[in-house]
Image 1: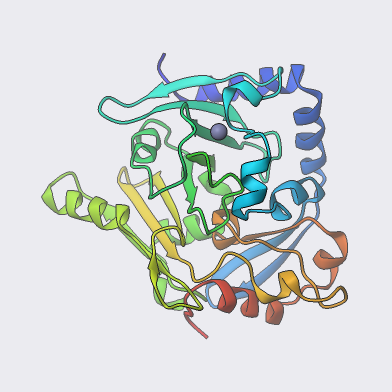
Image 2: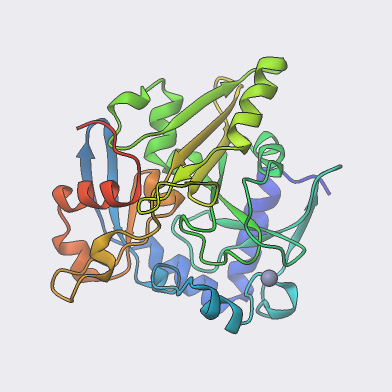
Length: 294
Ligand SMILES: [Zn+2]
């Protein structure tokens, strides 16, 4: 089966017809509130999204993960959820799934057919990006926002929805962003191969130990309107900011993953959404990413 944008559009439409939970969450998303922010040259938005509490509040420690049935394994998926198979010669075998807890109105999860852990950026996301111009693939390292670090997966949304992707594609420089970002256009030659290798081995640095860590990274792959493959990576220093575990009153429940570092800050709690400021956000960036422009 050839995977293309019309096929995925149809899959999403069909899933929403037969899957009440997903339909309710996509419908709630349509009325979710947003508030804009601008820090350096990043013009993003806060999004109030109560359904995302399942991901933002997910316990990602090893014992909690081991005790719950894996929601990406075929055996545990809801009856209503169906999968579009996708495989890469010499690469992996994947299932494309509608994400029932969407952040954006077109949101898919691409899960490995095998229950293997999130370990390093799957380069198959580049293959899928090349087939789906208009979409952006993104990957959360095991310690950088993945709510199922035990099951290899990446996700995709429409690239027009992500402020950071639009900014980078338009030629915006990384230097004026509030945190460090690596971005390259890939040419189809040996230089391009070198860039892909650099992308695949990209690492963050643990905030407390100072150790380089491939699990501390958010990465993106998409086809630009310039016809070129674009790759971006954001090195992380921690998954959750200090405010996540602050006492109620000071607590802001935010667990930055790729979508957040791309400029959409997801806040499941209405109170947090109402009171969060740009100053809070700078602190959240500083706690979880490498410091950039001020
Ligand atoms: Zn699994």
